[in-house]
Length: 339
Image (cartoon, rainbow, N blue to C red; front, side, top):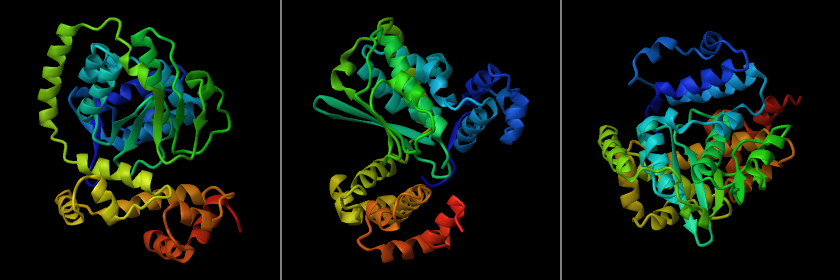
């Protein structure tokens, strides 16, 4: 996504609170991430989305909790998310709650977003980063998917488990907490962050939902949503299609335009209105994935080129040099400490 992305400043409170339980002073955590605590004096203030992502990573480091994000998600309080959280716990079913998460998340932040893809017996919930500057986001991603899972169990009073979970980041040394919380196959170094659920889970009722309150909350949420007109729906959809097509498909403009129900010319025009282009988005996604893949010594450079949709390694070399100023080999040497 182009331009600055933000999140409600109150989002940092739950991070400070969780870190304090480990004995980490909030002033130290704020100083380590250049966050100004006085921002919290204004209940309506917003801060850069990347700041909150950095706070998660630094809190995990300072607390020594390798599963900091997971533990935060496991104990997440929906009320901490304001109207978004209250609308979720007063939805009639878990599926309806997820639909509200997708629609109202933009009130909370425009730095990340959710999409739901139902395909028969299974449903995918995808958590995508719209802010390309938030490159290190392991604990935010793990917090988010753990929160959906654990809150989903809590509000439905049913001990259900996902079919599968995947994360963009590399596998941490210890995944015992991932297995305990999700109790299903967990994949790392994936193309995205997502939960795969049994579609029947969506029909589970929210046990303490108040239908009348839900109507009031929806009205309030729609009013708030109108204050933050979402201009990046097309970009978010395009990024998801490209992410899928990069895995052995065709991420070219003609192919993705067809999937969006647009002509290539119309798609390019609409993207220019958003201040970006198909090529810019494709390059940024390839650049981010390339950096992650090249940091894994076991992956051959020709394999990286293939995974990113390049027909020849030489084309990948030229593109990577254009993006970063260094060759893939030079970049890998620096990242892995090779000589």
